[in-house]
Length: 247
Image (cartoon, rainbow, N blue to C red; front, side):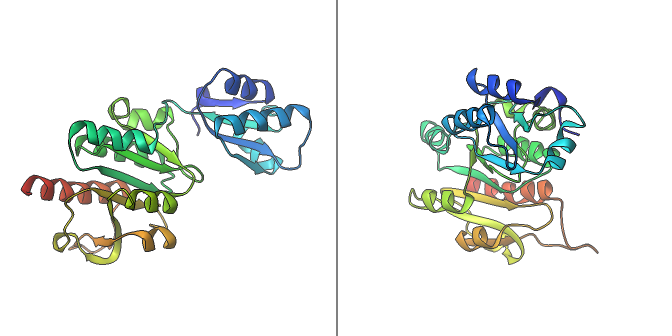
């Protein structure tokens, strides 16, 4: 269930949140509605850089759990988002090669919180998450991060593949996790690097995988062939940490 205190139901609460400068994580608008109040909400969303998701009324009924949503529901973020440039500047301020987690569609807030915690403990300079079809910075994420979200820079982008292209121009290399890749112990994971972790069920999307410079696999010795996304993230992150310490 969604954190109730972070869900805005109805046109006025959504509009007032935009006008007061609160950070909106996701905005849902009933498809086909084009009246004045809805147009105003969409205009404010555009100013804030939030893309509306147009959904059927049944989806809004589900999100609002039967409350009168009037065709508009939004999720508030528990924490503010940083920009990708702010993450890079943080690495520069510390005099370190950038180390960034790039999360391609992580939907489970518990996994996201655990990854943010790992990012902080591994010394990563920030985390990049996908804008749509992915978990945002909810209270559940904050709680699962065990306080790490207070200290970890998280940026939200609309296009993971495009962001990777931009960061490559600034000198970063990218490694993604995939069972079909080369053993992580055989890869050079030093220098400016982005660690790409994919969706819990589908893994890294094809386009994002093609953008990566390296594909790493984690050696498996047991009877099953996969790890939880957040666990795989931690294993690979600490191989990067090991190599950076050995440099």
